[in-house]
Length: 384
Image (cartoon, rainbow, N blue to C red; front, side, top):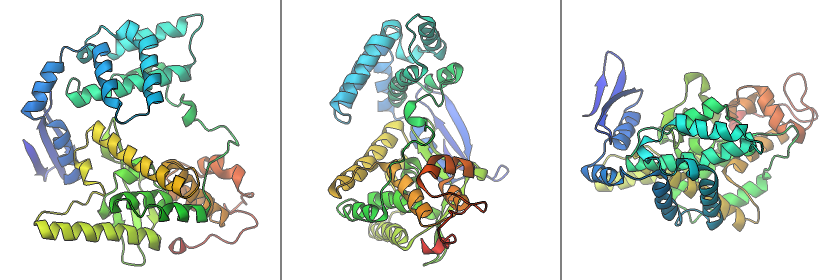
């Protein structure tokens, strides 16, 4: 049990026993990934006892327990809406089923029947219901009741991917972004935050990373020599998959501005001093807590980052979320005359057309060479 390196496979092997007593061995590219898998999978005796106590919980009982815990982290209105959705639409059919035995087939049948009714809900409404149920099943996974989330298969069977209205962008829809001076004001109001949180927000604002990419950031992703640094974006995190490496063809390199470099180097220096004083090995993770990559830990880190951004934005007199900073990074580059192709590559969009579809209506006409007409030639990445 634990970690070992396989020379034959050139992979690190994570070997652990999950909460159901099953031995699991999974290969990873890095030692860090394998260690995170072992920490997340290998349960202590106390966790197993908790799982045994909770093993008989029905979905309705688990929902009550989960909502009671969420009182400390979610807004009252969010909890009320979640409770209402579960009680009106899901618990009447699923409430008496043991949470550990809830299969995707039963959930699928319940929702498919609702689609056949005369007053059938919209598919986007079904997607919202499933989001609540998915969060509940993630909690069951945290308790060790389950090793999987059945909602993923239900979404696939009902073909509900992309039906969330917030995830769809209508043509010409307004993109919320901050001007460069507003971004600078927001960053100035982060001075009371921990260095790691400040660096994560800097990654959002000055490198255009997604929230999951910033939360899972490792300091060894900062490459190059002083003054000519760049960032290799090759990791992401979400509650379902944990920390994971992106595919080779999805990796991207983003130039590192002087301000971003200073924020990351400051974290690295502070981490080195602490390690020297304690004699321990310094963690390369921007958030060392992510070594325990349970869904609840990931959720807390995402909430911390989102709260820091919103608080700093309010102090600066603007409204912004984590994704607003990503939009701001892209928009300010485009308005300075940067090429669509470069911005697309730095954001990690699948094609320039995706970038144009999001930002095209907010910037001047794009010429045949992929630059913005009426603006200067694309700036050097090193001058960001």
